[in-house]
Amino acid sequence: MSQTPRIRGGIGADGPYWDALERGVFQLPRCAGCGAWMWPAHYRCGDCGSWDMEWVPLDPIGTLYTWTRMHQAPVLVRERIEDVPYVTLLAEIPAAGGKRVVGALHGSEDGLAIGVPIRGVFLPPSPKTKGYATLGWEIVR
Ligand SMILES: [Zn+2]
Image (cartoon, rainbow, N blue to C red; front, top):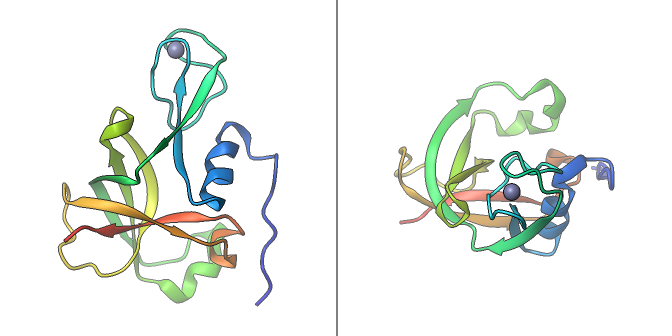
C-alpha cells in the first residue's frame, strides 16, 4: 500500500502540532502574552490579541470527555473503512487548561466511559492518517 504524502506547510496554525508528533512530542500552543491555551490552534490570541504563541510539550495524559462509535468511514478518510466500527473521542487535557483534542481510541474498549483516564500513544504516519503521525488514545487501567 502506498503512503499518502503529508501536506507540509499548508495546514495552518496547527502545523507545529503535527510536526512534533512525528518526533514523539505532544505539544499544544499557549499565548505568550496572557498564557491562554489555544486549541484548536490560532495565529492570534482571542483573549489578548497577541500574535506570539509558544508551543508547550505536555505528557499526553487526560480524561475521556466524550466519545462516539463510527459505523462508517468518513468520506474524506475512506482508508479507515477496514477499522469500522471504531471509537473516536475527545481527550480533555488538564495540563492545558482543559483543552480537548480529537483522536481515536487505541486498543481495548474495556472500561470505555466518559471521565476515565486516558493516555496518548504515538502512532507513525500511515495512509489511514493521510501521512500524519497521530496520537491514539488508550484507556488507563
Ligand atoms: Zn493572549
